[in-house]
Image 1: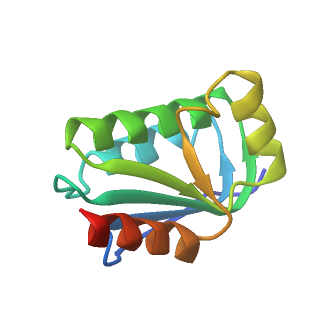
Image 2: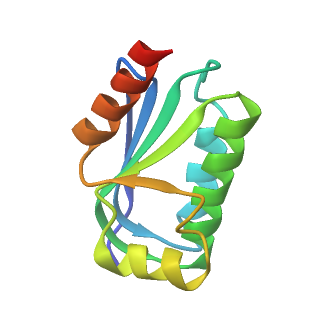
Length: 120
């Protein structure tokens, strides 16, 4: 098992959560708790960068749903970046692909938010 590392920082769009390693039963609860400590303002984007994720089980998927719910409650958006193929497949299989917006990179997600914000 690969230990999970979690890094947070801010971008122009809002908070960024970078995950690397295994997002599984043991590592998911602290990530979920951390989500709710992130300051998220209406109109911002919560970005979850999954580029370093090596494994994700149902507990990890639950964290992604919790991130979406946190963003919705704040009247913000959620963006997933650099979603590994194995995680994208799970999202497709469980029917979450239509409700979770994904981007190839974190920069693509931030650029998209910037374009949307400039247009409003």
